[in-house]
Image (tube, rainbow, N blue to C red; front, top):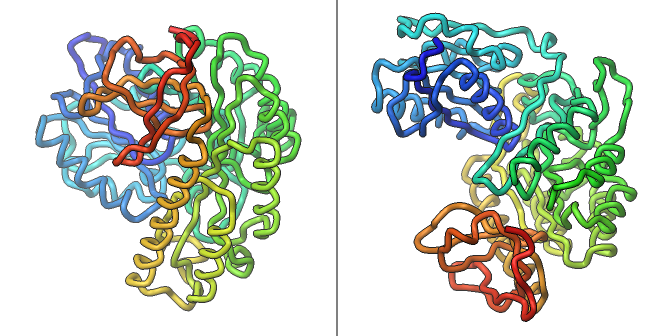
Length: 447
């Protein structure tokens, strides 16, 4: 198993957390002598890191397995991730799948690969989710410009639509010392931006040393990371509104490293539906969080998660959400069409919204999102920001993001990859991106 000729390829579905864990699993293969190749290339082992947040992610799995088999019919195909924990037998029954590993087994994947001979039936190794009570640190390096740093896993919330606690277990955290070590390791590799990821990162500190006590808080975490040398940018990914406290917002506002970009799940702008979802706040608190961010950081970018078509959502409920979002000073939406998930309370709730209505409401909110993003971009014209250029050539252009998440483009120049520049935003392009010019006396901040 240590022959350098063995090749492994990965396909990751879902969230930034999955990408960070794929990177950790990939490193375990490297330690066993495997060479990582692109998923479109012939490999001896294909690993698919699954997601089960939406029905669409489930359906994509079979397509990805077929893609692997079309490249190498004799390859050993392994499934890991949330869907693999929730429905291991279902995945094992998919033609071509040889091995399915659950929440705790996925990090020991190479232990299960003693023989790469394909199985007649998929083999399952999956724990009871109560056994997923230990923490495995992870981070991924994406495109040489940013890293996704996992700081927390699992969730103790009981949102009625969500399978994540069933797939990932209880809330638990990395030790503060290990997070800081990983952050320094990332900085030492020349990565300019770190994105903090987890299932419920605002709950950071719980389970840090194997108990439910909070040894540290999320504020302790961001304060400590803010003092790490060598990191150009730190970005907070999704954080629950009830866990986003004023002191954290104030720290970001005063920081030279944390960027003014927040992604805050709302799910519904109607308090009755928030109650049915078992969310831990009302919309008034959400509006207060947005107002506080904008008071301290007027140019901050704020993204919002919304679910449409939840059981019992009437036209009046939906319009309540639509109008609430219209009035909020936010920058874009991530819209999710509700889909029934097995073993959730919402799946058995009455007053199911017809799929046609769900799709219509989703389309309306996606239209609102486009308007919000355009308005936010327009508000930034004429202002100076710092852009970090990424590493992909897209039709002759290089793209990058400002610290407040405005996407800009420039003619492709490989010398710009992973560099920071002071720019002035000048106009919005026909494809919705922002053109810019370099600030008059600016040079590259870092190369």
